[in-house]
Length: 311
Image 1 (cartoon, one colour):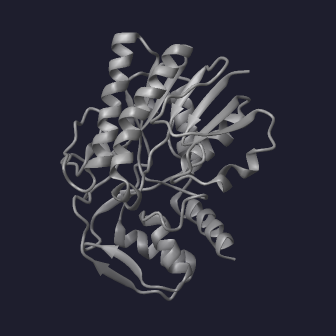
Image 2: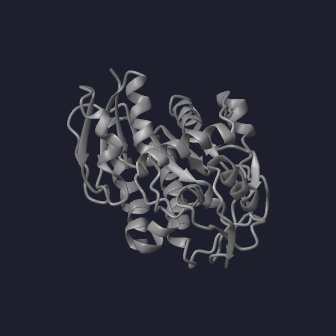
């Protein structure tokens, strides 16, 4: 049985990844210090004999006994509310945490996968964004702690790949949504769904013309698994290329929740990207992957989950 470590495994994406790997027949070690993750996200996995949980901060030395076949580094705050509240911890997770997990993978001769982000592209001057685009990032802005942590992490992963011949993967994750998102995590999907279910006005920042693309979590996890088990060492975008303005998206949420809520407009946050859309040509060609879940179908499942949390 292949043995895998998932850091940040109690987070939104990490918990779905742990679940998927268990279903694929892996032994899964989940590591999380629960700063932004939740024990509830992995509660249903605790009885699985092939699952174990370690409460640990990846910025400190990591010791795992026995073999490891894969290390997936998914630990990091990922929403603006979180990383602007704890910017130093975010930078340390991208630097020290990446260094520690790379060292572990090297010692165990494990395949290493970094969860990077579309935020490495910053406020892009090119759309859709291909992996060859170097980005347009403000290193000292409010979002810089997250953007630069991930850009540094990518550079460190490639250094380990080139110098130590470590077998590495880098997945650039675009906006993903689904069950187990935190209602208060500040991102557009839980924000608007939470407001709609509570009958509050839906908050749209700026004039609402900025765009996002939304990938349902099962599609994303499937893409990550294909990348993890591939031989591709360059970064790969995983996301849904269907692009919506935030106003269009808010109207879809209004319709699906049958809310009477109105839409209100607030000032655009600093360095908020005007466009976010992945070029997934590489994933299609080299992984045979593309998203399958339509936006409205995924949103119905997500709304049902949030409704259940509020019940």
